[in-house]
Image 1 (tube, rainbow, N blue to C red):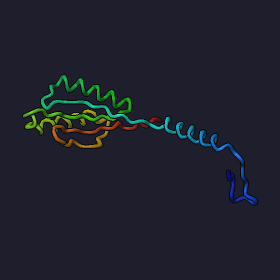
Image 2 (tube, one colour):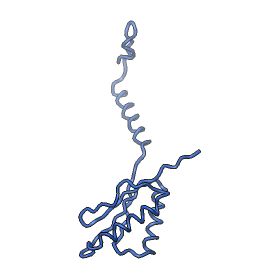
Image 3 (cartoon, one colour):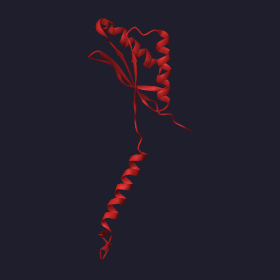
Length: 128
């Protein structure tokens, strides 16, 4: 293996190639283990979710964000409840507003089929 090709004369070293590959794989694995793993937690609402249920799920979302997870909140429309699209959007925007100090909105409410979803990611806290 060539150590420094620009030196005069070039410096080389004889090594065990399998050991070299093993050490490379080991370094790669160590780098991957130190990487931050992002998980997404789902929270499901109905278009006519009551205030108590909303507050219960709001606390869960708050806990997930404090742990550093992303939160995907969605309103699932069943059958004829698709008529209440506006209520679903209002519910998700209210959630985003209530979690404003914990999260930032990655994706505004968007209707995909029978689900309207919003994606929230935790705000990075700056420590002094």
